[in-house]
Structures are given as structure tokens and as C-alpha cells.
Amino acid sequence: MRKQITAALACMVLATAVCPVQVNATEKIQKVNVRFCIEGYDEDGYPEITAESSSGHYSVGSVELESETADQDDDDFTTKKKKSAAEENYVVELSADDGYAFYLTKASQVKLQGAGAEYVKASRLDNGTTLRLIIKLTDLEDVCTAISDASWNSDGTARWEASTNAVKYQLILTRNSSSKIYFTGGTTYDFKPVMQAAGDYRLRVRPISRSGDKAEGAEAGTFSVSKEMAAEYRAKYAVETEKRTIEGMDETNGPGTTEVIYKNTGWKQDDHGWWYQNNDGSYVQYNWVELNGAWYFFGSDGYMVSNTTVHWGPDDYYFGEDGKMARNMTVPDGRKAGEDGILVGKIKDSSKTNSMSGDEEEDYSNSGPAFAKKTETATGPAGE
Image (cartoon, rainbow, N blue to C red; front, side, top):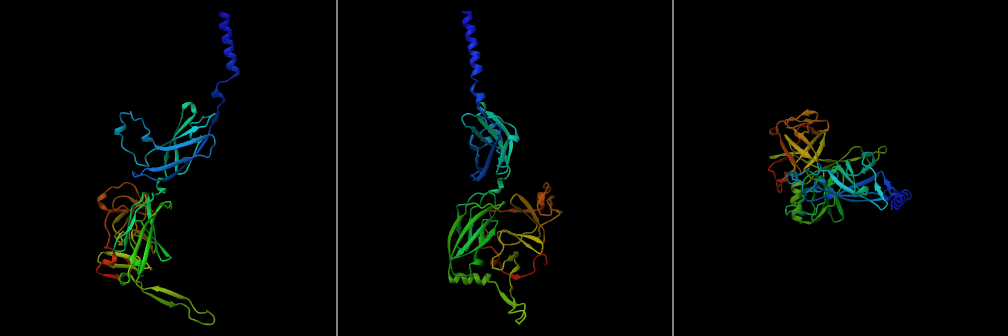
């Protein structure tokens, strides 16, 4: 009996030596490459992310918020403060194909691309057949959400829903087969100045992110301008021009060069403040203008801002008494403006400045420069 047991054990040892366990025959995956893409944002402002890899040895699962994959039995789970999209970590799991297993946990073995993805941690699960990656996304503001709602108001202004992460909106105004493009950082725009001809006008709005990414836009439909309405708009916004010949006609210089002079555009002032009319008749609305080396900002109502902090994209800027953007100086709230105007540092006195952003909810309908009592062409608030 003892000899039989010894013989059996010998056979087991021999079998083990000849036939190694399956895990030793598994192909090792020692490097992974994952590309992330932000498709948009949900109603809570969190990114909707897809992940993929060109590898033929493993597949990539869906991307989840780390906080949503946390242990629901954790006593502290319900008391934890909800993190913003930028503060959150994101989790994605990779599944190895049959005959393969992950043998890596170091950052140098993980290559991440897209959305500013940065490595935080990697964990091997299920005997190495699953790799759990925890990452952080740093380029969330480079993609903005699509908008689905845009509409005309009866007074020739238009409105649309705000897009997450949009720093400005492209406005495509079409009459007949001719289109013109305008830009604004707000969610309203007065088109009366550029609808001085009777007809039907169509509008399409597209949001644009800081990186220039354009999301899906919305159609506002058609706005009809009658002959009477067009005459009213011309009376308020018509641009006066004059043509001048720079070089006279002669045999040497030819017929000469003609220059168009715009007589009543540029800086204007009325009872409400300063505004700026472009050569096409439109006025600057929730946007920037650079004039003679200085930057100015105009609100949704078209008036220049002053003594105000403007939030544009991820940054803040300050505009002084004369409307010029602050540069290389300390502003009233204690922060410092760099050469690019971006404010840095901590706010020391929030009572020293007004502030505004593209999310402002004020109703600017029928309150733009055309509705002021007094309007006159001027050289600008800084005497330029």
C-alpha cells in the first residue's frame, strides 16, 4: 500500500513537470495604449467619454466616474462631497482576450491619449485577466456640448440655450443664398442692424470651445423682415460711407485707387454708455475688441464694461474705469493681471469689483444702443 502511494505521488510530480499549469502558458501583456474621446456632457456637467485601443489582445470597457464605482456599503459614501468633473477620477477596465493576461501596474507601461488623460493608478484583477485603470482628465474644457434650442424674438433678437464649456457662439445668418457670420460669447444677439433689407432671414447657432472645437448647433428658423421694418432698422443703424480717390487718373498711375470711408461707425456714446458699431452696422455684443493696442469688452446689451471683472472661458479679466483690460498690474480685488490680462492669485476683497460671465441671466431685449435717447459718434472712452 505504501509503495502504491509513493508511485502515485511520483506520477503526479512527473505530470506536473511535463504539463505546466495553464497560467504559465498565458501570453503576457506588459504595455497598454488607450485613447479617450469626450463626446459631450450630461445634464450634470460630467463628460460623456469613450475609450478605445487598437490592440488585438484586449478590449476596452466603458469609462465611469470613480465615485460611482466606489463601494456603496462604505459608511462615508453618502456623506462625501460631490466632486466637479475636473476634480473627479475616471475608471476604465481592460479585459484580456483568451490566452492573455496583464502583467503591468507601472505608469511607464500605460500610454494614454486624448482628453488630457493622465495616469493615476493601475490594478490587476481576476488573476490578471482584467486591468483597472484610474485616470484624471485635464482637457475637459476643450469640448463643448451640443445645443438643440434656438429661437427668434419678435423684435429681431435671437436666443439659444447655453452650451457647457462654450466660450463663444458662431452665428450664421442667411438671406436668400448669402450668409454672414457673427460671434458672441452670450446667448442672445440683436440682428436688427444687419437686417436692413426686406426678406426672410435664417439663423444657425454653433457653440465653440476654448480649443476651437465646434459642437452641433441649432436652427432658429426664419425671421421675416417687411419693407417697413427694414426702413426702421436702416433709420437706426444705417452706415454712411464716402468714396475717395487716393491717386488721380493719369497715364503713369492708371485710374487711381478708391478708398471707402465709414463716416458714422466706431465708438459711440449715448445716455447709457459707450458702444462700438462695426462697418456692417452691427454693434459688438458680449465680445472683445482690440483698438489701438488696448482690449475692451462689451456686454450682451452692447455697452462697454468698466470697473468690472469678466469671466471668459476658464479665466478672469479686469477692465478699468476707461474700459481698457488691465495688464501687468494689481486690480482692486487684490489679484494681479499678467501681460495677457489673465488674473492670478487669491481674491483679497471681493467687494472691490463687479463681475459678469456668459451665464448672466439678464434680459437685454429692446435695451441695446438703438433704444437710447441720444447717440453720437465719438472718439472712445479713452480719448483715442
